[in-house]
Image 1 (cartoon, rainbow, N blue to C red):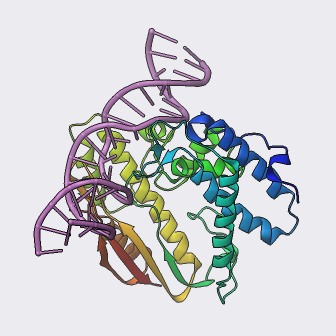
Image 2: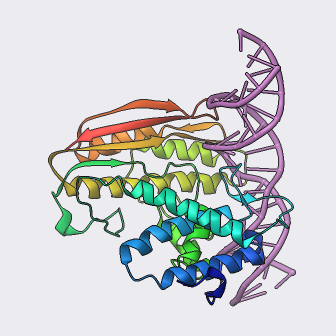
Image 3: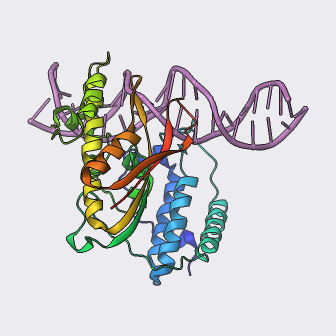
Length: 294
DNA sequence: TATGGGCGGTTGAAAACGTA
DNA sequence: TACGTTTTCAACCGCCCATA
């Protein structure tokens, strides 16, 4: 095994304005580390090293997480020592390795697919679905995950990021802002949801129409997803959705009730919701679990 | 038990950039 | 230059928790 300094660094990821994210020495260190990980042959080890790499990507970054929406620290000339960075990486590896000792008893399988249309071979296959999908609150996971997505080569261009955000349920970052302007509803939701959207749309704000469309698209997408999940469930199969409500211009979007109505229309029985917790922000915002059975 | 610094979460606004 | 696209991060509220 060579010393990290001796590896030829990979190309820097094509993330916009990379030196805002990492100062040159930090970026150089990460690129050499990425190059070193590429030489490891055992695939399971590569996966654990990649998890550790993701953590060090953030530790060495100028990203500030004192806010839900990633921004940057002030005055980031920053001291950098390759020895300290190496120690930090080793320490992360030890933590990840320790965590990996706890193995689930069940075997698992990861399938990459659009959750609005699960593959036909999965129909009737599952007895339980537990998930925490995006809330209708305009948080873009693509935007927040850019450091990982670019360093791990899942993204190469900003339009890939933007397209992925538009494809994802609940995305409003990048070009979604524009596309929502001309997006057309299919009027498949209960009428009161359109009434709520109309109220949002009539709010005194230049983004009002956009936000109304955002909310409608979120629920129309979720309705497609729920129909798809219904098909994937075995008889008597159950679902549990952790979701949050939201507010737009003081107009509450009762996500929990909308989920109940969508599920009932699709054919789920014993559909109900409970408050899981109060969210530590706006008084009217809660997290719920909505459950039902096929 | 009181206090207050630290910081997370929501709701977007607006600046910056790209291109026809 | 206009307009669509992409990036940056502000204002506000209030919970958490260490410390006195």
